[in-house]
Amino acid sequence: MGAAHAHGASNDERPRVAIAVLGCEDALAREARRITAIELRAALVDTAPDQATTQITATCSADLAILRVIDPTTGKSVERSVALSQAAPTARARLLALAMAELVAASWSELEDNPEPKAAPAIALAPVAAREAARGVVAPRPIELAVLADAHLLSSRDLVLGGGARTAIWISPSFFLGFDVLAHYAELSRPTGKVALTMPSVSSALGLSFGKSWLEPRLSLGGRVGYAWMSGVSASGATIGGREQGVWAGPELLVELAPWSRGRVHPLLSFSVGADVLGVSGTVNGARDVNVTGVWSSLSVGAALR
Image 1 (cartoon, rainbow, N blue to C red):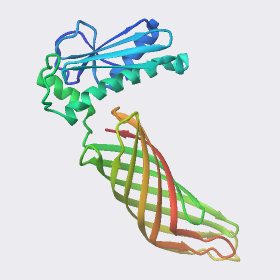
Image 2: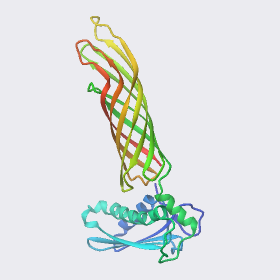
Image 3: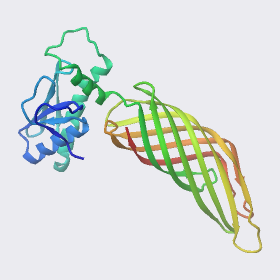
């Protein structure tokens, strides 16, 4: 995904940023500018910045980069420093870019948290359209959609693989409603044969986000309900296979990490634990039963669009 470069007046609805990286190697400067624009979902301006453009300057020295942002969307300027020497040379462009993006986002967040400040700004404010474009970057989007791969561990210590889709509907900057649809399948081996297990399920939950740093942690509590089909296949004529099926349901606690959640597409990693109040148990003669009941856990990875 590349950063767009605006060369003049444009109908681009994204915020505009001008980035100057001084004292760094040319390759590092180009990569840092490109990544920063992507992180901010902004149009990168090559020409002289105007009143609608947020200006970013990074001045590199041997160990540090001094960052300065002049932000007409909020009428203020902010500064910080970042220790480039703490990162490997190949990682310094990304470190510098993330530092610049975080500093700009911290300034733009005032548009969401304090849209009408009482104190007069130090510099002239940008037009309303530019302010709204910047606010749209830091304001949480109302809906996030994700696809997931999931590993579900039953109370009988059987691992069942599957996947599905998850959505989060944001009802405030911190709270969201979460829903998902998952399906799992496995053929579980036992000394006397195999048990084919199919487990579709749905869940709903109320979630809380703990900030918008590069790694956004989330916690949600809700319930999951599903249906289980078990079909036993005997390994010999000495035993007879059977079928079991029924509803399984209970509470679920989910902990999720969303790295780089400001990006339109970002990864998700989640761990959940639940306890089935209703469940299904498949009896296996002479071996461990298959239990879709009791305490279970799951680990999932995915990609989200927001």
